[in-house]
Length: 153
Image 1 (tube, rainbow, N blue to C red):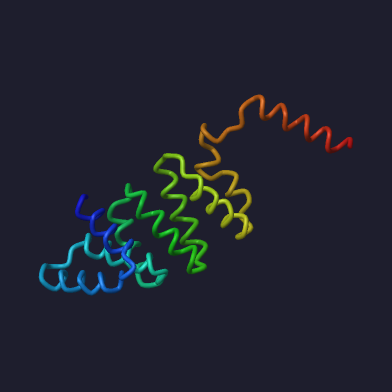
Image 2: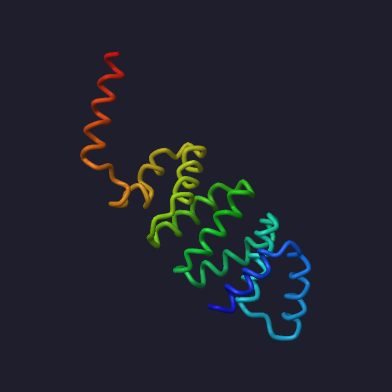
């Protein structure tokens, strides 16, 4: 795990990421290719907004380890930039279903759902049905008052 985070931080945060990619290719030539090396390549491509190349890698990694929320969100980010709404929506849904509060990912999912005319699906997303996202009673009461004032005003 530490190996992955160290490589990802080094390769993706570096201004010379493609140079780092050359070093990763050299390291891969020395040792047998592992799923971790493939994942590092995918992260490098996504960091450079080359989203088409890592999609098959991310798809296989997500299928192999369905509990990796970071990979689901990375695949969703790549799908969103590619304009592949079904891939992005599916990946966001899978990642959000694993739990936690992820405001930007939830917002992206709702925006994609609305853009795809799936408004019913957006209302039923895992984040929208989370107990943490339900309005408080005072918020609901004030919303009704504001709605009443807007209708009569």
